[in-house]
Image 1 (cartoon, helix red, strand yellow):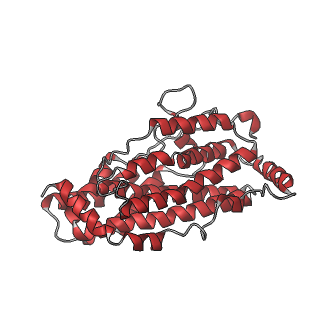
Image 2 (cartoon, one colour):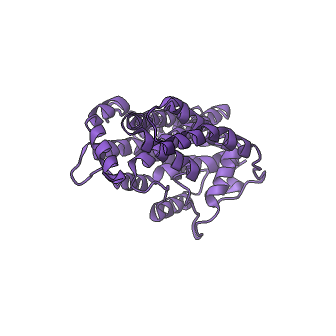
Image 3 (cartoon, one colour):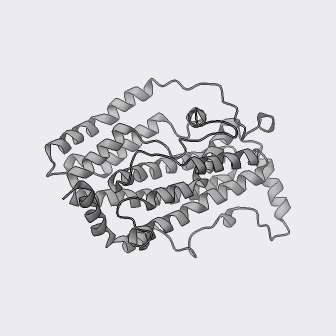
Length: 329
């Protein structure tokens, strides 16, 4: 049987449990928080007072913080790309509406709230050029992405396990910083988003755990492949209006690193956490090739840590069209 057919068989085997995954890791629409719960109430007589207060507090947030928040928002807003990519993964059938496509649609529904909330906050804050933000978002959806996984479910689930934990780290750190600067409402928003991301991380990493149980060697090789290739962020094709895809994502990443929202050390830490979560040191019955892959993976975090220590982050902020320095202290 071909590798592709084996993966399809494993996905069909796991699909029997999709409803339990939905019940365990996703929350019904009527019970989960909605963006409106954390924003000024537009139906209230106090709406304009609430917006005024939001705008006053927002004045205390520094430049790199705004760049990071905008970049996080744009990343969340590009969900159409992520859903369409995952719907094309081997074993996920949206035409027949199988269990896996149900998972993807409901996961997307939860994730969609994040961009809605952050976008409205940015709009009300008066601190950013929303038209520039909106053009970047449209460009990112137009350009799509290539995360190096192809249609392989094993590689895609490694990617989503890593990426959901990375977004948890980012949103959680933004929440901590917002609180430090006195913006408790923004802090609460980002904390709630981070909670969703952690829940989704637990789901995708559980899918990988299940695959390791039934197809350990191929899952190990897929894990090695993704770590060798390096996890690219969903917004790696980020660009500003009138620009080509070039260095915008790196400049956004520099802002995030400068203020400690998401760093090279976090990347290494996530890698180590996945190695420990999947207990790859204890997996038995591996082929010789998969054993070599495991050896490579076990040594990789230490190697990457040494490399990350040598990284030099520019001290000067790149000036983005999204955030006008004159509006930021």
